[in-house]
Length: 143
Image (cartoon, rainbow, N blue to C red; front, side):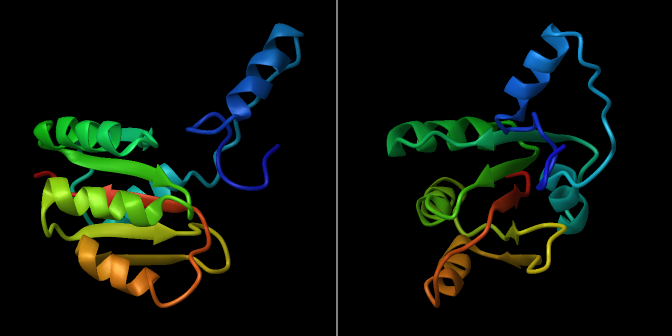
């Protein structure tokens, strides 16, 4: 059981699932909160075809390269990001996608949930107003 999100979706819960299955412990999925699906469905962007890429690389050059490759796919992109790296990621998105209107969703299915559509620069300005908390789901429209 998990207290936040779906284990195994860009989450170390996959290790627990593997170990349980290896020891004959049944693993029974129960539909529940998954930031990927919640963020995509609340974004109001095309979801008939999308790419989920989990967390971007930590290193700036690799992050830019991954975003450049994702942009070339010409489809909606869903990413996860931590509060510690959201500022760098939004800066990189602005660099690769320009002033695209992307959705930044925070704390989906929790008490302080928010879903905001704005440019990377506007999101950065909003985050600069206070401490950055929560887990983020980013939904970027097709380039």
